[in-house]
Amino acid sequence: MRRTFIRPRRILWLAPVALLSTLHGLAEPRIAFCDLLRDPQVFNGKEITLRATYKYGYEWSQLYCLDCLDKGRAWFRIADDVDAKAIESLKRAPKGAGTVNITTRGIFMSGGTFGHLNGYRYEFVAESVTDVAVVVKGMKSIEEEREAEKKWACGGSNPK
Image 1 (cartoon, rainbow, N blue to C red):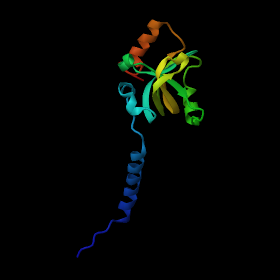
Image 2: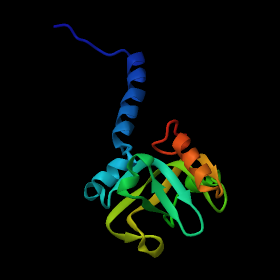
Image 3: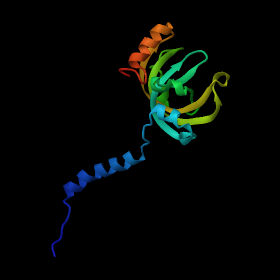
Image 4: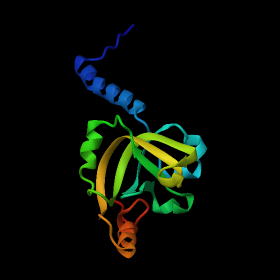
C-alpha cells in the first residue's frame, strides 16, 4: 500500500486559504437597498449590510436609492454604540447637510412609522459606516441636487 502525505510547504499554503474561506462564510452578504424595500417583512429586524445614498440635514436623515424611490425611503439613525471607525468615516461627510453614498451595516426595521414626524415607513439603525463618498456638499437648489443624484447617487449613471 502506498502512503500519500502532504508536504509541509503545502500545509503552509493551505492554512491561509482555509482561514479566508472560514472568514468569508461569516461575512454578511451585501443586500441591495431596493431589495429591502421590495420585500421589507423578510428583512425586518435583521442585521443587513448595504450601500445606499444618505441624505441628511436639519430635519431629515434618510437612506434611498433612485431605482426604488416609489417604494419610499428609510429613516437613518446611528446607534449610540456605533464603532469608532464609523465616526471616523462620517467625518468625511459635509457638516450640517449633504448627500453621500455610504456602505453601512445595521438593523433594518419596518412595520411602523419612524423618524421626523413619523414620516418614514422604514428605519435603518447603523452599527457601522464605511466608504463615504460625497455626492452633494451642503444644501443646493433642487435642480443641482437632482443633477448630482442622477450621476452619482445610488441608482445613478455612475454611482460613487
